[in-house]
Image 1 (cartoon, helix red, strand yellow):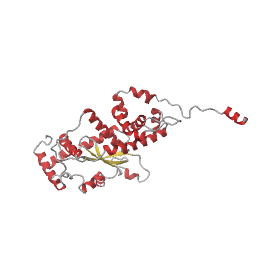
Image 2 (tube, helix red, strand yellow; image 1 turned 90 degrees about the vertical axis):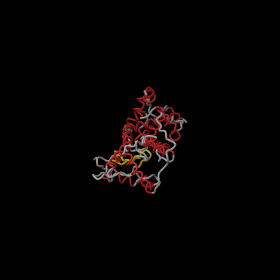
Image 3 (cartoon, one colour; image 1 turned 45 degrees about the vertical axis):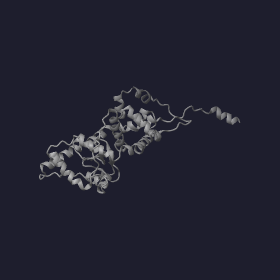
Image 4 (tube, helix red, strand yellow; image 1 turned 135 degrees about the vertical axis):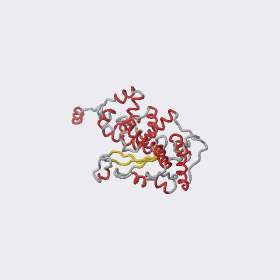
Length: 325
């Protein structure tokens, strides 16, 4: 009994088991951000930020315990967005958001996982039915190219050279990368993404091994629209067709430009999904929806693909306006 009393008298009572941290930047400074400053830091408006918190709360919400309070969903989403937007190191993230570096790492994985499995199936999907009609009409109105359901291209995403087979990832631009292939609609939204191939592989090989190429071969996509190979034997009509098609393909180049300008850590599929969320929300806010005429028809038969190319070639050459009703 005396021994127990002596131990109790010399023991130190601990009032807290974690380091006291100052959360001034997140709790105070963030509230004083203007709308422009908020977009610069998190790459989206406050309204879209709140929308993300609401959509991801089911997967990212954690319960309080008798030991500590859980990190709010809004802060978890903020950590994920800030890292994807800036590529800041974990130490910087830890100091800004006043959480441990290990907590930053785990939250980033949780955030990207939640975006991929909650939002990606909704925001990155191949257009069907009325959505496909809207995309076709959008290319006709905005880019003057009818019967087009998407623009496809590839982009190199920088990576750290892997230890094994690092030469395979060394691209023609003299740095290591993986290839991100994207299909984009008329509003610069990604409708399909594919990334598995190292940077040394040609874009044509990536396309041939992708899902959309397999669907096209089986006739489950839409009629293939071919280009005329550049040579001195092309007619004036064929050259003009290529020019019009090249102009329509600017959508995918612009989409990749916006993606790389908006996000710094592009190794995550979440970036393409967040890009679509941002573009869609901005369209909804500013009323930039494209109205689809009711008379526009659906897909063409595969056997008509060559006829479509020949018809459009003639229309472009004779200056027929394809953007009107």
